[in-house]
Amino acid sequence: MTNLGRIICIVACIWGVFILSLFVVALTNTTEFSAKEGQVYDAIIMERAVRKKLKKDAGILIKEFFILTF
Image (cartoon, rainbow, N blue to C red; front, side, top):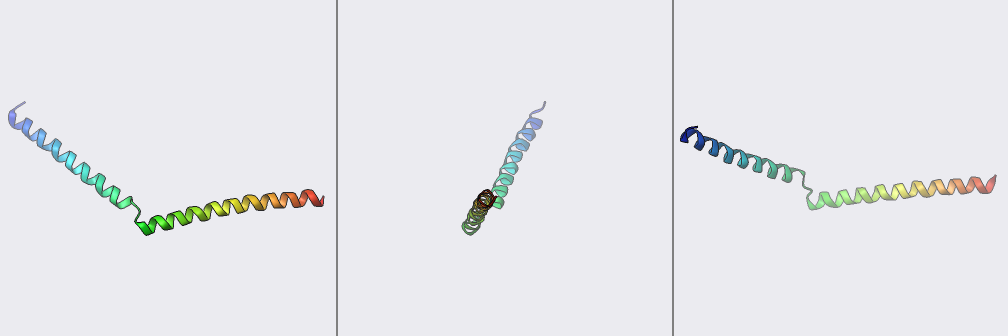
């Protein structure tokens, strides 16, 4: 209710926004990939896609083999 209390509240709010923004920046920098990490991530995703397609193709091949032999 006093002017001093209002000033303290305003300073605390500004300080809180500043601390929160520092936290967000630190979190973003921590979780962001570097160029090499991005390349490795892309390679892993490509390898997973190739394995998934290979499993699907192998299943189709086995299914066709059994259909033709029996």
